[in-house]
Length: 209
Image (cartoon, rainbow, N blue to C red):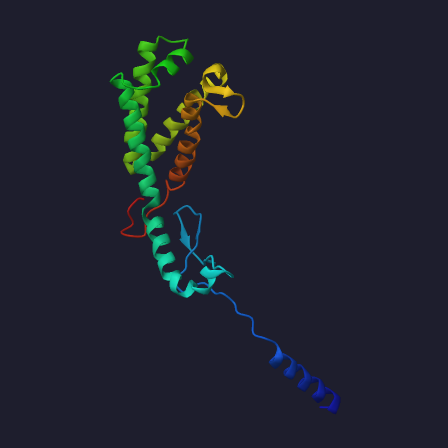
């Protein structure tokens, strides 16, 4: 080897030794990520959130186990809690219609003019109770979500048929009735989350979520 080559190699080694080592945040050994599949989530590799600056970053070594435990708890029970909550809400709201205690009766009466109210309102109550019951029983959530998405367009009709009732300043100023309707967007989003688990089994005991 020539003297020039040896000098070049020595210079490169010295330059590398002087270069500061960059810290790389690697995922913990038990980290997981889920990708979709016919059999549900599949553990692969996760790149967890790691704060890079600020007081939280300086204490992340102590906070990370707590953060992981809380996230694991929410992952374990979150979807199940959401599904049960949806079931309870629909059974409750539908039950109020069946016993003539629903505050939405006047709104429905003013919206539905193509069918006798005395016939339509109990049917709507039974429909909502059915959604709730099917939502509570995990193997029937497909039926619940199908019924829910058939109902949702009808719940939005007052926004178009009765704007004087649902808006006090169009298009953003909602009345109490308008807010009652717009909150259904949350129910739709929750149904999408629950429906996304229709083919998923939980890790513990292969039970349905």
